[in-house]
Image (cartoon, rainbow, N blue to C red):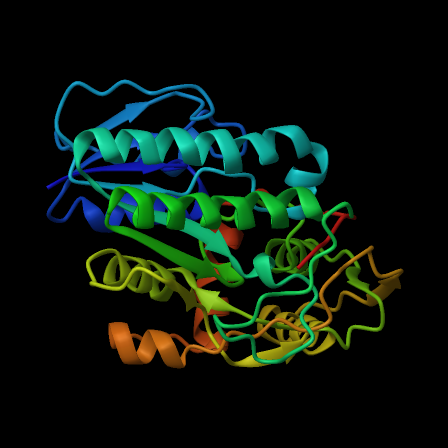
Amino acid sequence: MKTLVTGGAGFIGSHLCDLLLHDHEVICVDNLLTGSSSNIEHIDSDDFTYIRHDVTEPLYIDQDIDFIFHLASPASPIDYLELPIQTLKVGALGTHNMLGLAKKKNARFLLASTSEVYGDPLVNPQPETYWGNVNPIGPRGVYDEAKRYAEAITMAYHRYHGMDTKIARIFNTYGPRMRVSDGRVVPAFISQALSGRPLTVFGDGSQTRSFCYVSDLIDGLVKLAFSGYNEPVNIGNPDEISILGFAEKVLAITGSNSPIVYKPLPVDDPKVRRPDISLAGRVLGWEPKIDLETGLKETIGWFGKFAQTGISDGTRA
């Protein structure tokens, strides 16, 4: 099969390209706005093609395409707060362009959506039937609403054009190749701990997250892509931990003596984030396998070996 991956030089996208190359020809599309060529420089295969392109502009591909995974988008709060217009455009124009390409090529299509469509949820855990609690004009709204629109247009193409589309609502994911400075809590805490700097906790640390190791996420995406299911599906790990508890776990695994410092909670920062994955279990036969401690040890090992340690004062989860 020939598969196109937008955002293929990003953290998740590059891992997806790696897996698909076992039995697919892969076209990786990325403008490197938040992705990095270093994430794909290890790939040495005649079945891999990289195209530097901004998907908010039309993309013309001569050859046949069997599947499109649309992952392109800033995904870190640090990124989409600095790139609000680009984030909205890739969610709207980029998704429209990729759906149009999928329609032209008669290709199946998977949208990488996000748990952020639930906003600051009033129910916990969050099932796919929950419509969310989103502030459309808040600072995080550029990402939340871009993905909500992307879901809407994907379902419109499915219903109106009869296209085979999938929607994955991705929850917090971590693992090797995360950018140290992207502001998300996993790379921030790890880099702070490894460099002996204070770990920055926002609010009192009681807000919760659920962290899914990247290999589990990729397995879920591929299972969804080749399933017969067309409605949104949560892909994440339901094991919930407070941000303060997570900071303490990072300190314990790294053996760091870094202190914990507290800063005000950002506007619209979700108080809870935990997926209900019962639907994924029923329709995909999927559940995560990697526990947090195992995944963190792998991630910390990679950061210690490959990533430049430093500190981010803009930690977000």
